[in-house]
Length: 450
Figure (tube, rainbow, N blue to C red):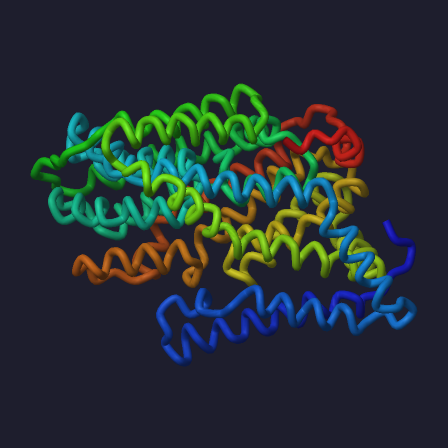
């Protein structure tokens, strides 16, 4: 860690936040552009922030700054993260997303309509773990949720809120989620270790959510049956990825198993033509390009900021506010939460917070898997409830396209899982006794990132 402290070195981060948040507010609420925050080219805004960072630190020549940026981007954890992004994208491109409706309609066909909201939550949990994307899960399951609500008599906000909560559960735990990849590789820990640490925080919140959804559902007068076609064979690649990931197999091998099994099943069931298989893999990888570029640009910016003393200044400020290891964990969570509120993107928030969190983990003696768990969990908490996040905007758009008059503020009271995940996280930080673990610095030296 750099010895010098220079708060002015943090200006590039401020420039990014002001431009992105400011333009997002103007687009979304002044110009009334649908998905306003997501019409802003985030890569362009990060490039502007990088230019600002390059203009600072007059002591270094531009060639020296390029060397610093190259060292930051060339870090083993960054390269690993980028490669996993691309392979995970290929996996999703191969297997597609048709299994979501199959899982949903299978469970809805065997469980009474009174419990449909609980089913939607559980299905969304599974689908988001399998697919690694909360937005993709919401896109697929929300139309089913609206149809279920209209057929059964359950409230649309309850059903859509249940889908969103389940989607964030999987986004937090999935081995192929970009948030998990970013958190684990940024902190240098094995995904299986982070999963095990995260699971015992997420599970109580999920169980409590199911109980509360069930209690709320019993207040509705429910009627009707929910039937549709389904094909469970297509979920096999997702199950293989989940089982292999939990068992501790290298993440690259896990994804290759998923791609190979998915290709065989999709071809055998006639869901895809052989000629389209490679193009779908390419399209899946291309879907990760923006996330990859963000990781590269943020790494370059953070290298310059660190060399100029910005992170030392930020860490000094955090230490003055958050005293002790437990408060330090809360400070780490609030740090990534603030980044998420500003960017409305939990992956970007984690990538931005990673280098600061590494220094905080070393200072407070927090293990790398605990640090990765905190970053992923708190980013999902905030991303799961902000009314201008992609998850909420996609859910509202999908519901309204089916004639459901629902707003973000109708759904927010039913976002039970993110609220309970926050409560569970605080309990695990302040109440549950913590086992002695290896600090983050040793974990990084061991290279246990995959």
